[in-house]
Length: 108
Image (cartoon, rainbow, N blue to C red; front, top):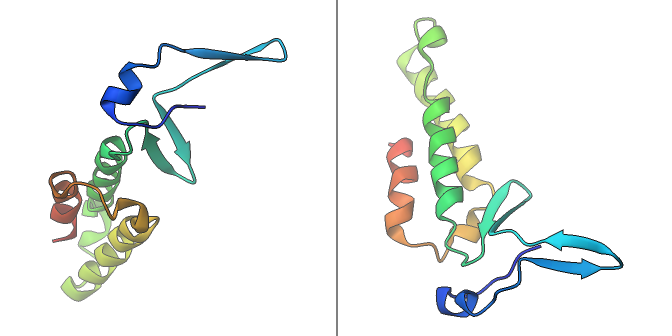
């Protein structure tokens, strides 16, 4: 469970846990839903960093690169990167352009 809001709104909230039927539920700054890391201010900064890291990891095809033609390697990289970027991309619609540049650089 976590709170959503602007930095000013979240600064007003001092609650770190909610007691429900004798069980303390601790609040978090981030949660993962369907593989998307959501922060309390909806900036998606951590998700974009993680996504860019995953994309750059997939670009490391050194082991099989020698066995692929240039066109086959391009197709493979495009498929591996596109599926990660396209997954839940509607959530990134309003994300700041600065955050998305690291993802775009992995697509080139």
